[in-house]
Amino acid sequence: MERKQAKADRRSLAVQNLLRTGPKGLASEAGSPASSRTSQAPHADFKPAALTLTPLCVKTHVAAQMIGIGKTKLYELIAAGEVETLKMGKSTLVTVASLHALVNRQLDAARG
Image (cartoon, rainbow, N blue to C red; front, side):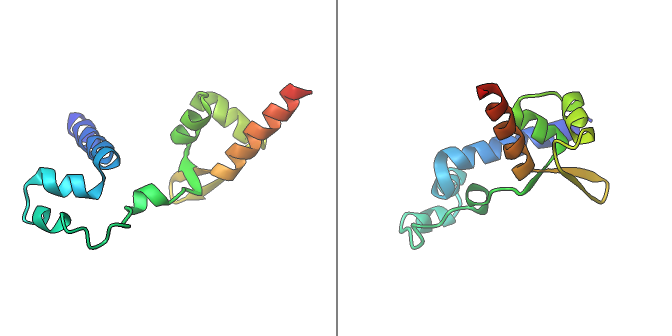
């Protein structure tokens, strides 16, 4: 279990580093031969896919974090039909659009 956590931590740090330094910073820090090529910047408009794609669906624990609630409350909202889900294999995915709709409904109700 510790190995899985360590691997996830390394992956998280790599993503944070990529977000902070961009693709050029990664190559130059690594000291690889590619670092000399990145200074020429032939593709200055390059953006990694992780920075440009918006997810359509997220796993339940991520959906709960996105709107600041616990998983139990999220499952209550799913059961009540407030949030849309779909199954992909064993994973339950929550549509991001339904999370936006839920928050908008809650804001409208709070405003009167």
